[in-house]
Image (tube, rainbow, N blue to C red):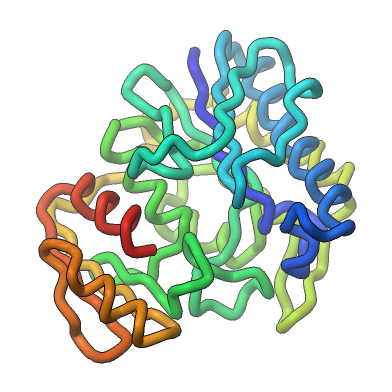
Length: 265
């Protein structure tokens, strides 16, 4: 069995302020440690379930956060950004049997995390076929594109609720809840244990029920915080300016949507 893990930092337990997610701040090291620990837990659960190979995509900011030497030897770590439109799911293909998303967070425009955003801080919101899109949804459709089931998602409670609304069969681990600019968090060691257990259990069931169906057509709406970004993005081939801050894009294939996001988000 071959398992793919995409890892972010804003959805790990404890992370509450942007200073805790950026390398330039002293607070970052503590949460880099916890991000690594939660990823290790997912890897260990997957390996115990029978995975012979685990790929981890470091998918936060610089994509150089996870402490590689602490990962199990079965793990292949993908660091940095290659430029491929899969972005946070770079390297995923049909050879994998399952996907896990660790440390994910609520979408831009939501009120369930003080760190809510989608891809960058530029967007007020992103919609795909009238659904407000988180990074989870964007990446879940990538998994759907290559027909690999998503078996586990961890992060804030708002994100976990969104994940189960898309497919109630996938496993979720809510490590915190956002309240305004604050968070209520479970203990770091408890988060690690819950993720390890959920990873093992999620791979011990029939994972085919966790596949995400891919829509046949895509209507995308992207509202920026700044009108200047919308104006510039409206020149992407196929894009249209809906209003001074909002750009629309239509496609029948999801890779075209991902290419759009790669250049305008």
